[in-house]
Amino acid sequence: MFQKLFRRVSANIAAARDFSGPDGQRVYAVGDIHGRLDLLDSLLGQIEDDIADRPAQTIGLVFLGDLIDRGPDSAGVIARLSSLHAFPAKALFLLGNHEEILLRVLAGEPGLAYDWLGFGGDACAESYGVPAAGLQAMSEERIAEVLTAAIPPAHVDFLKSFGDTFRFGDYLFVHAGIRPGIPVEAQQPQDLRWIRAPFLSDTHDHGFVVVHGHTISDGVERRANRIGIDTGAYRTGVLTALVVEGSDIRFLATGSASVGCE
Image 1 (spheres, rainbow, N blue to C red):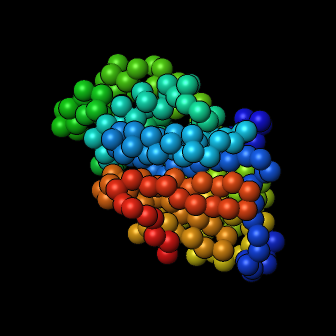
Image 2: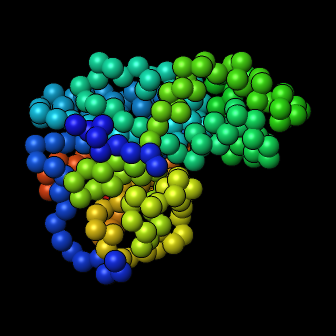
């Protein structure tokens, strides 16, 4: 059911109107985890409890990308999420810009390795037992070799399986956002994984609500045409999940009694 909606990859001002998910279905969307296995485990526990308290016929669990880097246990996060087979919801995964860069580094693409280490890849490497200081002294080719030897092939294959969008009724889940005015089927992976401007400031009705991570906000950032749920987990301790069921939306989070909305 959910898998059919999972894919890889007009100018009206957004007005107040009702949005909803498909009848009889629920989805939980989890924001950027960035190596915080402790928060992930806590939030998954909350989601399991929520499902037990509120049974539903069809339940999805979508991760918006940026599972890795910055936080202390990228390896643990990947191991946990790649083994969710018994979880009481169908798990789907979107590729974030951090996963994209790691895969490109592993493929030996030049000009990326040192930048990746500088924006959080060092913590990811350390979680796989590779001292980041040693990598800084290596050539990019050698960095790719060392990381390839350290990261289990199953983890790499898992990341390669991720998609770019997930449509759920009137909601479109992506990592970063969309290019305004472009049909979903024509969106470029570069935008879906990296965009900020002009997406974040755009006020037009896209025909659906975009649910995204990528850009950290203080609390959930809820706008007429988008909902941002990257609450900076790796530094704030707040990992957020959006719950969509019918015309209702609500939030679960770690590290706080409630999740504020901007």
